[in-house]
Structures are given as structure tokens and as C-alpha cells.
Image (cartoon, rainbow, N blue to C red; front, side, top):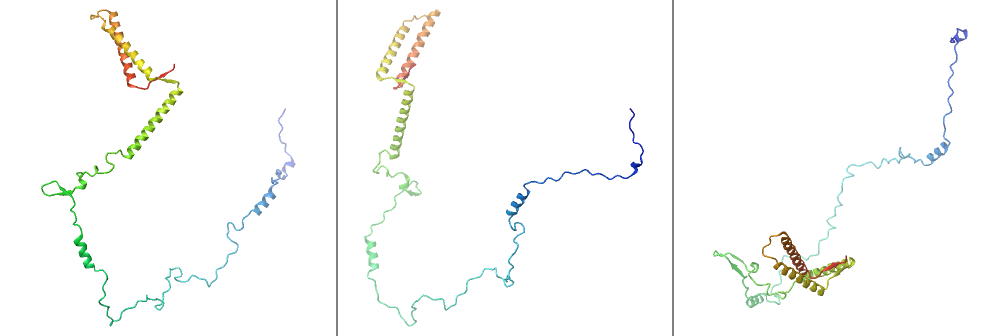
Length: 255
């Protein structure tokens, strides 16, 4: 099929009117009137440009010279100042003579000086031949502490501390007892402890008696093993006896 080609025509020579595409109408929100109304209602008057009308200052209230400088209070007149009422003696007046006090200070001071006890010298000590003197009270040579009423008594703070330690020890022992009770541990009584010690000592004597019965010459392996076994048993028994004698309170766990 042959390709179509534009044929020359007289109608193509005439100018054609340009056809513009039809644009769709612009979108307008349905809430536009309500938004405009709310913005008009909530608009602050004179928010950025200042007040619409400002009171114009009067030309009579202009800034005068030295009006902002601090001012001193008004000076009082000399007539306003009132001096205290003092009776100043005249030049021709003379003081009254011959007036004496009831107390004779001269005689009083003399009697007091005569009857006063002599001042005791301050106790000092000399430690060098050049005569250097030091106070005896601060030297530690004066037995002033043994003359106190509470000398030799236990101080209160020591008694208080001992009481606190005893209370803390009792609380600790009580907590241990409570813990041991929870763990179901049995405390060994004194009779059981004594019988246990006697039994251990009896066993040690038996093992020691058997150890003494060993031959002097140990030349075989069974004899050496027997000797080592007896020595181990004796050491273990001695250790157990020492532990039980050292601790008076012994607890046994129920297994």
C-alpha cells in the first residue's frame, strides 16, 4: 500500500486560527468562606503596625534642662533648727565648793589594799641552767587528773560503745540462730559435745596404741601403707579434737 502524502491544495495556503486547549476551571475549596470569616474574626487589631491613633504630646511638656539630674532636699532655714535647751553658765558664775561624797574612796582603797591576800606566784619550772621558765600546769608534771572525782571510772562513751557492741553481737547471734533454724541445723548440746570429745580421744588412743605396736623395721610395702594409714587417722583425729575444743557452739546439718 502506497504511503499517503500531502497533496498541494489551495486551502492549505489560507491562514488558520490557532486553537488553544480549553483549561479546566480552577479549584476552589468549599471551606473558603468559613476560613475567611474566622481569620477576620480572630485578627488582632494593630498587631504589626502599632496603634492606629497615638496621643500627641503637648508642646508645653517639653524636656527641660537638668530635669533628669538628682536634686538635693530643700535647705532648712536657720530659724527652723532648734538647739537643745542647755543652761550655759555665765562668766561671773562660780562652781559650788565644799561638797563631799558620803564614801571616802581613799580610806576604802587603803583598807582594801592592806587586807588583801598576797598574790601567789604562778607555778613554773626551770629545765635549763640559763633560767628558762615554763608554766607548770601545761607541762604535764602536775597530777591533776588523779584528783578528779571520776578518776578510774569507765567513761560514759566507752560504756555506751560496749553496750552497742553487745547489742549488735546479740542481734547477730539471733540472726544466725534464725538462719540456722531456717536451714534446719541442729545445735550440739554440751553433753553431746563432751561425749563426742571423749569418743574422739578414745579412738585416738586406740589408733596410737596400734601405731606403737608396729615393728621397728618396716621393709615391706604393706607395712609402709599400714603406717601411713595410722598416721593419717591420728592427724585427722587430732584435727577434729582441736576444732571441737576451739568452738564451744557446734551445729550439725541434717542431711
